[in-house]
Image (cartoon, rainbow, N blue to C red; front, side, top):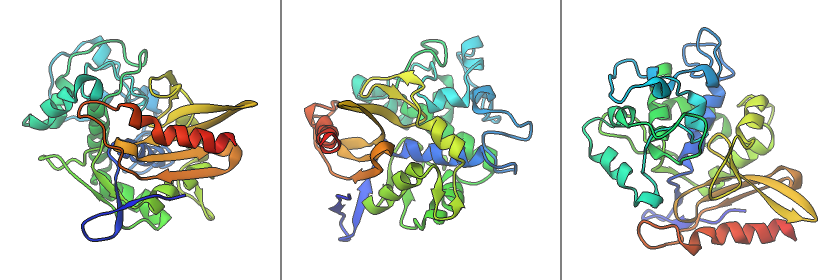
Length: 294
């Protein structure tokens, strides 16, 4: 099911701010199945996400507030929104940290300089800056822009060609937002995950990565759990029906319900007061819960 709205050119596009984090996860998953210089996660040593120190994956940067907690930060911590960084860059803080990062002279250094608020991996704290940092890691590890990497290994195999992504002043794709996709192409991403990373006869993402990334790794806020850039929820229908969802700004959603063999791509702008999500944030989710519960 698709729902979209026309842009100025008359075509149906989507401005899916937070959904982009999930697409960061796709290239990471691709990297986990490759052993080439574009392998982001496993590296030449064959390391796994939990063993890769995120704080040393951007070797040309020096940063402050360095301690053992920051030293222990992993790529997996970034993926599950448990970096331990004091980001303060979501609606809960009126996006102040995001504005501060965007106004800084070096966005990567800004994120690396952030003080630590806790031990990485222990507590969920949504952090747009962590997703931006992961985009920088992908570019440095692959020697390709994050978008070019995603196009070559992720979007093109799915016949997704109408895609754009904004960059920072230093040329890093944002990671956390400002990517443009059609609702139909959003649904393709959900279908890929529903089919355990396969598109037709091609295994685009390792099935083990799909299983891992859509499993709840940490207690979350808006939904029950958080995976690797997927929110994890359930609906009570006699027994509980589990689903996972990519959540974007102002109503952008990709729902995947494996038990029901359902993918729903929803692309609608639900406007709320600045700095809030408000009740309208939950409209798409509530309608979806009713839909799969009947």
